[in-house]
Length: 336
Ligand code: CP
Image (cartoon, rainbow, N blue to C red; front, top):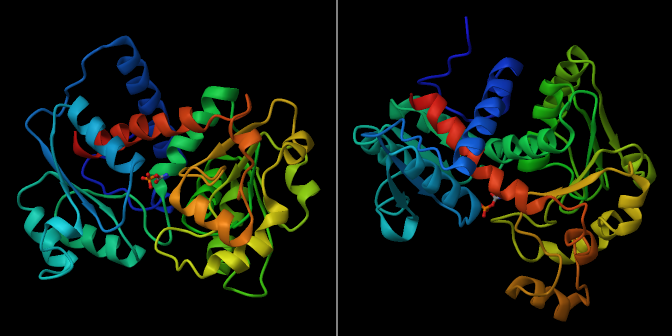
């Protein structure tokens, strides 16, 4: 019997089997081909979805909106500033109301427990558009990008540099384990939990077990050469995440600077290695935060140099486009 995930929520990759993830990747590639060829695919006409955002977004919001419109669906965007959500009505009550009006609900916010609770109560599929713990739609797009580059992904090595635990890094660890990709986390470990990377031991153990089942490994290292050596993909993310206090910048810059992705780091990886970043990125001072950091700490590039970001190894905009194709696949497969 083929894969069927209709009616399911998409909250974290741990809930999905390897076959289901591979099915979503294949579906994403098909949607991308259709979009490129201008083939209409309004398969979900008559359905409506709602997007609940407690945090800001460019890629995730636009991917859900364009994906829904391409599929023929109606879409409503709600932020805390333009609804009762959070102020006069709990997220839980909001979801129970919206579950009676909409066919699916996207949620971006804080605790994973919240999106899990929404899914338990909404009565319709709920999609995680980022929580403190996981960012599953992001890493589906990352893997699609890697697949497009290399074809076969099993046995490849992906190394995450810098703040190597968090919603994106942890989601990458899970999806790599499930797909037999060797995952390496390279950054300062332990110590000051405000700045260094601290791993959830249960998640790490679970991913190591899953990776072993699929013939791959999970490596945690502070050694930059070990991290970059033989890597097919070098990945990084901002050092201070969404919703975290700006006071963290000083300690993070001190701790993470050795793990900035530079041309030297890329030269230690395989010659055909590519660079990925979930975006947004602080690779220059052309943002308010980037300019403030430069003025305060004298740092003009943070997690990645502008040289690498703009290099021919960088696939970051292809990766961003793939958010739309993969999110479209997730909404279609769970609503069809
Ligand atoms: N990568 C990502 O989630 O981007 P947005 O915050 O713009 O949605």
